[in-house]
Length: 262
Image (cartoon, rainbow, N blue to C red; front, side, top):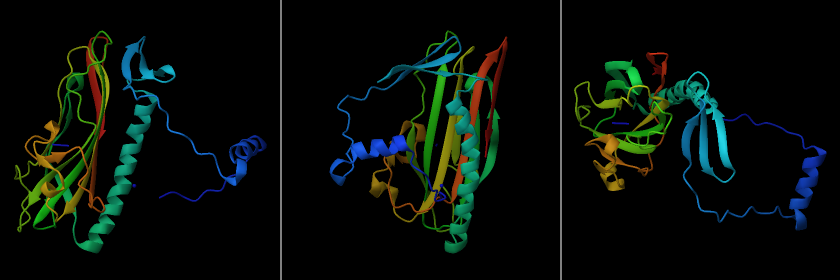
């Protein structure tokens, strides 16, 4: 376009010890076998303001939509800003140690419009020279039309990598200046409802991504950029983390679309 754990101690109760004893016959823990059941992509629909996920082994799992978001979406919306702050702190340390950092400046500020439409345009700058900025983009989207049927067209690619070349003077192309990356979400139609999120992790590399499988227009979401749904690998520490998210619905006759971005 397109994060340490504290060591914890735990106790094992009687019932869990019994379970471990049973599964640890012969002194070796039993190994869980992979299911031979083929994976079926879940389908979603909304019934009485409840998101129904079908096609999973247990049949149907219902997740209540409250305030336009499911519990999982709410948790994700809280976690993304926290992860961005922590990730950028680590990226700043890496930049101080290596002298290479990446920043983004708004060309068009984030804007949430009716029926799920969104726009955010930024330009990149970096202290890196003669290399490439590579961004890993992670997307989610749940959308239903005015009848509660799942919208399956125009759903973004869940995960992909895209790259911009950086010349010896630090110029980032295409397109520039100040307009390198567009994060867009088109309208899903009057009366539609749903939730979306985008997350970007930006790296700097001196290895040509074209030699690692990225091709021009490889992912439609990335436009003309070098892109792929497979990681080029060897990217090191992300120097910049970005996110945007939104929830839209129609309350009475008034469409609403709220969210956050950084």
